[in-house]
Image (cartoon, rainbow, N blue to C red; front, side):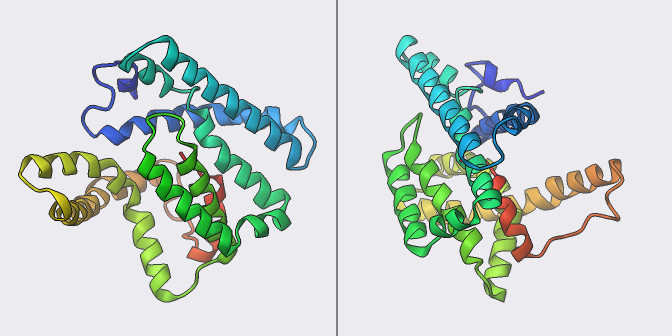
Length: 248
């Protein structure tokens, strides 16, 4: 029922990264309302983008206010709930606006120097590892996705790696933390821990995809009558849709 985030003792418990699933569910439930409100603004990227930026700032300020007001873990726990995490979804929506309504600006955002700056910013954000409001990782992801849309990486090897990454990435994300904790308790450390975690997480992710995700996707498509009509997009066609993904 997606309720574990609302219990401080269950929050980030088993399969800790799954806490973001609740944020995604809440965001996508609110997205039609957001779309209706944005549609009332002028049909360019400026005003909707500005409105989204203001909403992002307000949500983050609300989160920081909770952290300051409620000391200890309770303040951070409240700040990591929706809508105080709305800011993390805004860069993806702004990138989607720019991709559709300002392709000229998208080409500038997606240049190679900007993509390299995005990689550096993302790594810096990972190093700082702020518990809340880590804009460095969000901005870095924003620039990297823009670069992937504009540069359109091509080649069979890239296509195979991208397909494998897209297939296993979410299962990898869900399982990696608990697997790292388990391996550390078993005595792994340093580069040995990193290598073992990478291998084990890849194997578990593949099993998770085959045994859980793929059957669930087939069931869902069959339930709604899309199993025979669903069209698999080539990598090149699928890339623009990445602009609509949350980048938190």
